[in-house]
Length: 140
Image 1 (cartoon, rainbow, N blue to C red):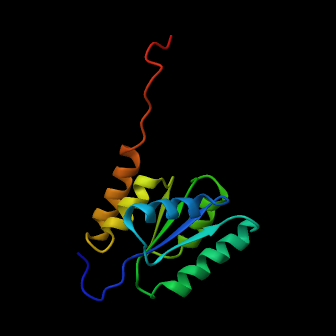
Image 2 (image 1 turned 30 degrees about the horizontal axis):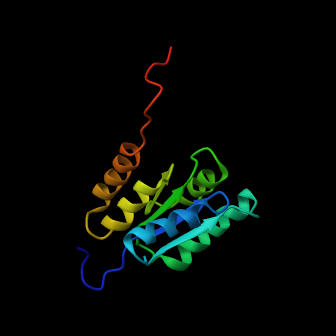
Image 3 (image 1 turned 60 degrees about the vertical axis):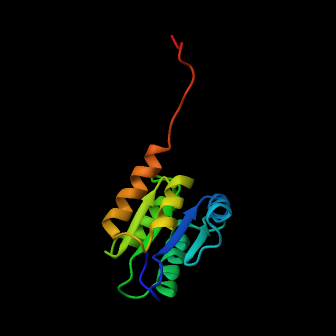
């Protein structure tokens, strides 16, 4: 459990269109309302403006020494690039690309309960672990 009075790690979900809103809405339907998790869509933003918006959110919502997790939908897309650019000069920021619901749930449930290194490992493991394909077993 997190220490009494300690704030949970800030998470910022940066995605194309409304994907981030839906991921958070679904996560909250499972875990209940969450604090210190915000969504930023790339809709209507140039690449430069999106980087500025992400940096602004970090500055507004996180303390100077506080860790932050930026979630992006696509590593090679505008959201992943913006998160990477925002984190480039900031060693307290972790960029987690390829966000999916299992990864987000793992973050929300375990932030403040485990150390940063373990949280990162859990998020990556859970996000990958839940990706599976079945069928087409008789494929030529």
